[in-house]
Length: 211
Ligand SMILES: [Zn+2]
Image (tube, rainbow, N blue to C red; front, top):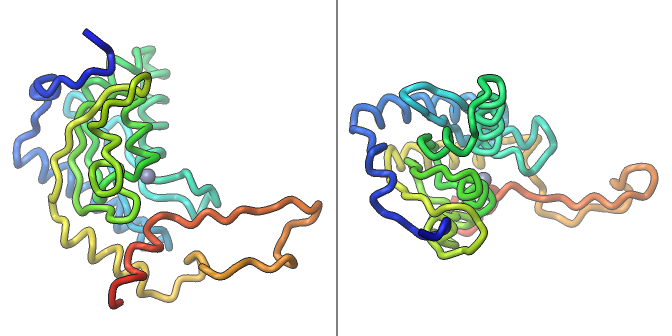
């Protein structure tokens, strides 16, 4: 069997019950609320292995000034630490780990999930602008040779609530909210280094709607 081939039955043994989804997603939403309270785009997630949380994260882009610190990336780093500390094989652990996240993973995070062989993702609302699980690209299920393993998604859990939180974030006066305008040269750091401002995907989510 090809390593990259999609096997729809593979994650069936992980199929969480409604009450499990409710329990874990509730904690993911708590993380998203924490993000919102800290001036971050409200996305929260958990990684669950053998009924145990082995990684959790919320968006930390503003705090770390690092555009890649999405909730999923934070959680995946914790999973890898967890494996290292217990001398477990990350591939074996990840193959049995479910991600619970309040918003559809973006293209970047979906690719990271593939590379680490996470088989199942349960998420809340769609990410219309940058979603990597169907909204923009199908990173989750496309045939992408040498790019990890496809994963299955269960979508729509508390979706309206997840969207409302994103709307709340973009409505509020937020000093950390990315400015869409062109940066002036005077903002360049000493030494003449060029700063490329990478806006977090969701800052564009609602710009085109009537908000
Ligand atoms: Zn992401």
